[in-house]
Picture 1: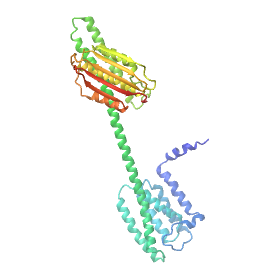
Picture 2 (picture 1 turned 120 degrees about the vertical axis):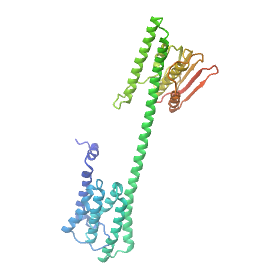
Picture 3 (picture 1 turned 45 degrees about the horizontal axis):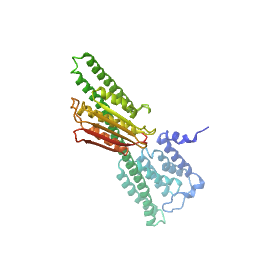
Picture 4 (picture 1 turned 30 degrees about the vertical axis):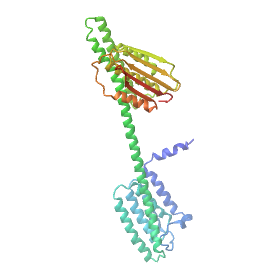
Length: 384
């Protein structure tokens, strides 16, 4: 059986000239039918002549150029205009005269060059046509010619308006596409910052500590193993991120969630940071992107603790509510700054934007004793 829902898609696969040819042939065939004989355009009201061989040629000149009305609008408009003039001067008054407003609308939409020149030439050509009809005995008054001319101008104006509307829509789509690309680049930068900064910071801290363990081979081996494990995790996380950037990636690629916080805390402990971790409640089943954002808040906070307060006591508290996830990461001020790469402030700014995007609250403040505390309230139930 024929699936009629696919007919429009199949039709659109044809070349535009083929599709426009159907309109040209249909209008030409209709113009030859006796039932529509008295429904043609009559400019000048001259007595209608019966159709003859010349009338067929006039109809062909009027209608068939519509096949290229979108591909070559100027090549369509000029013969259609000439055919219309002959149709009126010879008083055939066929339905093919409808081709003129169609050609004008199409030209207003699709004509790219010399638009004003063509408009002026056609307007100027209308004057001798009106004079020729008047000399042929037309009873039409001046207001009739002016009214018909204004109708033609309206047809051109409709095409020009449609052209402007399409251009505005295309510009709007371009702006949306550019904004989308900019947002995607920002998201990618955030993910790369979170993944690379955390693992590289841990590796630098571990490598710095290993320099002082040459006299204790067993501890040195453990420290170097920790560096190696951190590097492997960095490679794994980068591969996962690159999978997400691949246009053909599997939509089920898993992103970090609060269920992996214990692993994250343990990795930070291996880098030499004393971390106390407390969880209250259970994550909601439909917490959506809130879990991912909560994970990133803890990850960035622990990264900053390694960089700016290495060795100081760090507390991580995560509490799951019915509709929110509360995160608090506090670091004492008695630690030492490591040789890790300096920060640019992009990490905390990215966290604030992530939390704000979900309608939550974020703060990062220094404590009275010189420490630092990060707090976040993240609404859950926002599917990613």
